[in-house]
Image (cartoon, rainbow over all chains, first blue to last red; front, side):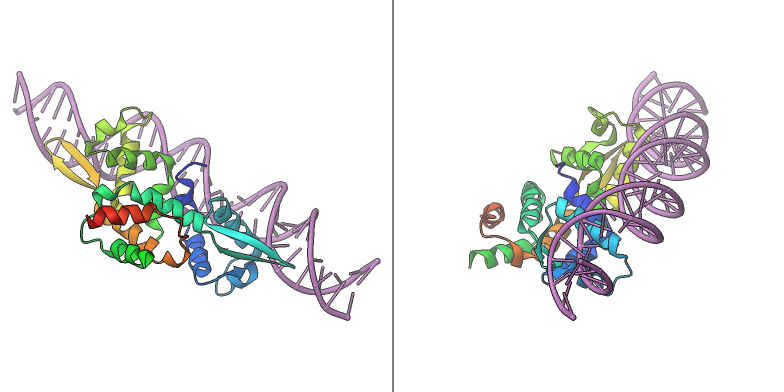
Length: 104
Length: 104
DNA sequence: ACAATACATAAGCACAAACTTATGTGTTGG
DNA sequence: CCAACACATAAGTTTGTGCTTATGTATTGT
């Protein structure tokens, strides 16, 4: 997979919202549609893009398919971002806080 | 600016390459074209997109315009990523290394 | 078994985005 | 001052992407 594909997946505003909803907790495709004016096939297609990018993963449960954030996708972004640490200004303390949390 | 715009800027493979070239060091628009089969206006337009996304910044120097990575764009991505730290697997040690570097 | 439900896939359409050529705007050396 | 250079902007064309409707595939409850 081309490296920019993970960014392409998040570039669409609708998919970005879907990802944020999933970040709040696992959800099936129908539940994800609530609050969004989006057809069922459109949701299905968006979820396929996010899944192919490694940002979400699915787990079938009966007739429902639950989706959840795939840590692998976030890890890829984290690794990408880490390459450019030379450019981070010292005032970017969000990462410092984050790392402290992970160290715990 | 919509949050997903920064991802849209990196979603295009050509812009992704341009950004990576700039990560290696500041460069003017003509120098950036070397090695890429891309017209001068296309490069100019790509740089405008990256600049509007806050990923690069420009500094005119005579007739040349030097471009360089804008830390603010990376900081935005870092902050975005930090929101999802709950999902990071412990094996993602890239960030740990990164944070250690920043602590130094 | 079958109707209903949940989701995926196919095909086609409409709009957005990336490219092109042409031209405009600054800046510099002679 | 003006020709050459570096880059930006305009306008038009093509390709890609996200949407739709229609249909297919699983799974469940009765």
